[in-house]
Length: 141
Length: 294
Image 1 (cartoon, one colour):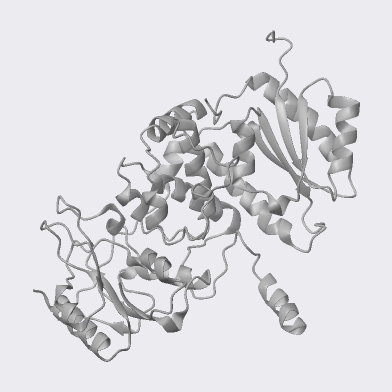
Image 2: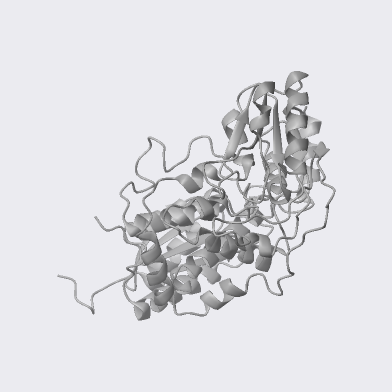
């Protein structure tokens, strides 16, 4: 039986393998293993569809992260510019519909600076701890 | 019969009898004074059915998608707001301009069944079609233009100031009225996927049960799929049998686009690129590469 103390937020991380995957993996092993249940999905940020995010929330995620590369460092040629804009619009729309801003976040990870995502993921876990479990967009069967 | 209707019938008759087009898409008078539904005219002798009045609300651009795989040449009547849908469809490469003949209709603002001016007409910015082959004009060609709204997104901003839980409750309540008839998707000219994810055989992505939560995710997905391509014709909201405020979502998306990418309105200029698809300045580079390959 899950108690309030043992509850851990489920964070689905859509992570691009080009820059963010290894630092994120490392960060979780070192700092954040016990703070949240991280679920990694390796996917390029330009491939992200609104349905991926919604499906994660429907199936039980408490938070969703989209991690792409810093502007100009995309492993593809230029998909990250448009992708970044789409994620921003998606974030605004979900926020408009009542999802807390902390629950869907975007981070742009630079190749040269492996610590930004390492700080980001534990911080997000803490934010979700204070928000509590997510019920919005949850699929009710 | 008003002057514009007479001109429209004449133009349709000429086009059909000369064999320039296979079909004229216009409006006809319905069973009630406040109904002017779409008409599909294929023979010159049917041209007298056509009618244009203050109740010709329908945006006919969406119907063109039913004919995108055919060889039909279609003449189509457009009002100012509809012409933006046409431009957007051409930009999306859904239509071939050569197979279209666009009849521009002047518009004095359309009225709903209570004879009041439609909400979207009150702040109309483009009463004159932006693209046409033939422009009809009546003698009393007074220029209609909506009042200039000071902040067009004021209602969206006001709603955003409510607490997240209130917002979610509001939308959940709205979504529980949705019956998933997909009328909003069928009527929308920007919703032009050949195989809609919500209607396709593939399961696992979009929940099929019409629960409020699933409906909400349908709204979000649809709003995101037409993001940057919605031309604010307001057809989705008009056609919704549950009376849902769907344009609020589209306008929230537009506000977010404006906030992040600068001022952009879909369907204004031919060959404009949506800021969500491409970054300005990039296109020339890419097309140059593509041309080099060829």
